[in-house]
Every structure is written in C-alpha cells, then in structure tokens.
Image (cartoon, rainbow, N blue to C red; front, side, top):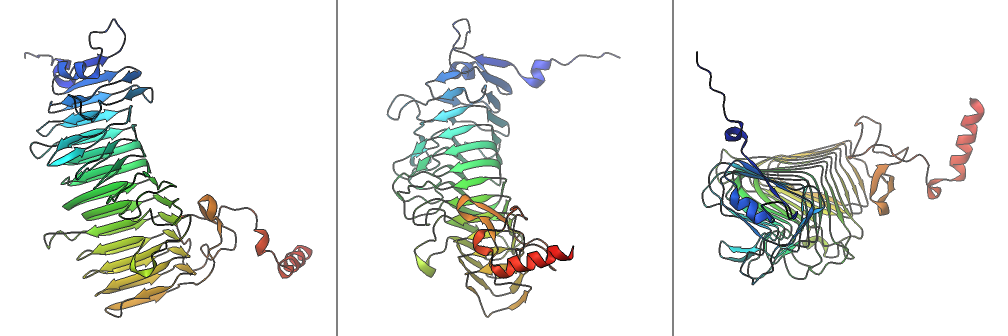
Length: 438
C-alpha cells in the first residue's frame, strides 16, 4: 500500500504576516492580502495601518493582534475605497476578520448607493459564502450620502453572517443600518455584542442594526444595545428587523436619550411563502428608557408585526416603553413579563394568552377578536432595585418572585435592603413582633 502524506499548506493554507517592522516583506495589510491565495491566513502585527484593503479571494482569514491593531481607512475621494475592507469575492468559502479595530471609515460605493460599510463592505458577486467577525471594534465609521447603508458593516448576498464579541460605537449611515446592515442573508447570528448608537443628524432606519430577508432568520443573544445620550435623529428606528424568524434572547436595550424616542425597535415577520411562517421570540431581555417617550399612543417604542407566524414574549422587562404587538393569523403568548410606566396593546385575529405578568402604571388593551386567556396577572409595583442605574433585579417582597408563577421577568432578587420609602411604622412593628417570637 502506498501512503502519500498530504501537504499541510494545501489544507490549512499559508500564513502571511503584515508588519510595519522594516525586516518584513509585507509592510501593509493590502500587500499581504495581494500575496495570499484562497484559504490562506493574514496575521497583522500591532500598529496603526492607514489603508483600505480589497479582498477578492474565495476564502480568507484576516486576524489582528488585538485592540492595538488599528485600521484607519483611506478618506473618501481618494483613489482607494473609504472602507477598511471591501470585498469583491464570490463562491461559497468562509471569510473571517478578527482581533482588530477600525476607526473612521467612510464606505464604498456599491449597489447604486453612494457609500456602504465604513469598516467592512461586502456585496457578493454571486450568492453564497460566509462572513464571521469576532473580537473587533468598529468606531465612528460612516456610510453617508445618497442611500448610505451600514455605517460599520454592510453585507449582502451571503449565505451566513456571524458577529461575535464585537463593539460598535458611534457608527452612522443616512438610510439603513447606522451600525450593522444585512440584506438577503438567510442566516444572521449576533452574539455578545455591545452596540452603541450614533448622535449623527438625519433619519436612519435601524440606526444600530438593520436586517432584511423575507426567508431568513436572525438571532441576537447576550447583547447590550444603547442609544446615544445626545440624539440628532428624532425619526427612524434603532433596531429594525424584517425576517421570517426572529429570536432575541438575554439582551438589554437601554434608551439614554432625553426624550425617550431613540431606542425604537421594529420586529417584522415577512414570510413570502405560506410554509415559511416563522416565529418571533423575545426571551429574557429588557427594554428601558431613561425618560418615557413623548409621542403618545400613535407611535410605539417597540413594534412587533407578524402576518402569519406566532409571537412569544417571555421573561422580559419593559420600563418606560410602549409596546404594540400585531399578529394577524397567529397566536400571541405573553408570559412572565413585567412592565413599568409603559403601555401594551395586543392585536390578533386568533387571540392568545397573557399570563403570569406584572403591570405597574401600564394600561393594557387587546383586540376583541379571537379568544384571549388572562391568568395570574398582577397590577403592582415590581420593586426594581434601581431603575436609574439600569438595575432591573427586584427586591425582596416583589410580586415578581414566588407565587404560582415562579420568577417573573428576566432577573431574580438582587437587593439586600428594603428602600427607605417602603419602610413604615407598621412594617417596623411587624418585624419587631416577629423577632420577639423567635
């Protein structure tokens, strides 16, 4: 039997090093990428690189050395793109970018837009392929001009996008996706992200995240989403997702704007085919405003629209938020949620269940169509630990713990002391009498 050993480089590819060390052959990232073939890896040494990089390989790994690897893309109007990385790739390979920071990119013209993807711009020449971003920071990148989209990241036409352990801070676009923009990507997964909105002027749909794929699915988990304290845009949305299936789990949405109008969320189920009636799931997450919104009932802070699928909202907390849920032909399940100083409106032809939930200073209305089940709902103060500090754990004695429903809301008891304004002479007397009997 003749055994032939495989060439490791043929399987794993070569590693090219981009370094500003004078002894290195590739002094720029672009030079290392130009030397590489599909399947290779680019390793970037620490340093600040003033350049934009064009990628044409079917698959490529670009890996920095951590926060000290900084890319400052070329300015708009120069001979180069204004994106740190702009892809003209095709095929079904996987691309990875990790362990680096991109600051101040201005985007690349593509798909009849003036600018796309201040940090990363991808418009696939043919359907397929995957993009994974991990351990990166994208700061103050923009996609401005006519129909500017994806202030930090623009991706279209891929099979899959994964973004893990990434910070997006102060990125902006004029139209769609001030931070992240994904369109016609069937699978998108965002995990362990810190997303901070921009205070740039103008109207932008999905100021922080925008996604559209009528047959796609997006999953957002373990994320912190925060608006800027100073908001130039009073119109538009912060997070806007249009997909067949949406899942948000263990995320915190905090609105720091002075008028409570910056962190508007729109979740829309859009199934083009009857057999693709996916669900919308909101689980173990919080939506909070520093001040309540000012637009009244005609504009909601969290809008959930689903023509055919079903909606489940479970173990969530809403503070200072007005929620509108409209599910035309599917059931609504609202269970173990807590709402403070907001409003809730349900609309469904089928009806649904509102169960084991706490409402405080929150009017609730529902359509008179379909069959609705209301069980174990309470109108009481949830006794949050410290709303002003975004601490939505609850105090001992909260209606959100114990009872037949178990824990209500995303967090359990977290405060050791009873607040002063909740202490009365009657309470002190009961505590003293209880102590005497022990």
